[in-house]
Amino acid sequence: MADAILDKEPPQFIAGECPDDVILDIDSANNTAFVHWVVPSGCDNSGDPPVIVELHGHEPDMQFEAGAPHLVKYNITDGAGNVGSSCEFMITIQCESVKYFMCLNIK
Image (tube, rainbow, N blue to C red; front, top):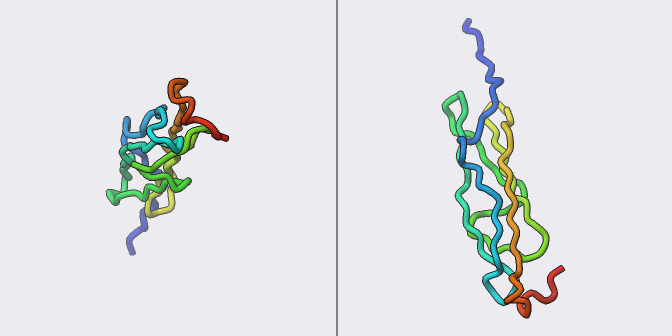
């Protein structure tokens, strides 16, 4: 009978693939901006692709509202249930003073 090998090593995001924080000015009259980023990829010692999930429902090319910063957080998990370190970055949509008339009613 062969001994089972337990995978205790968590998966990890590829170095340098977690996006930096994003700060953009509004690009529409409704106080929003579309933001693009590349979803980070990861690897696992098992050779199987890990599962990468964004926890807040944010996706690249989404429209974000101006005001409070938006947290984008990806978790990475392997088939054995090991959880690696998360990838987090903030998206801030701001109003330029020149566009003040468009920035009314921001909460």
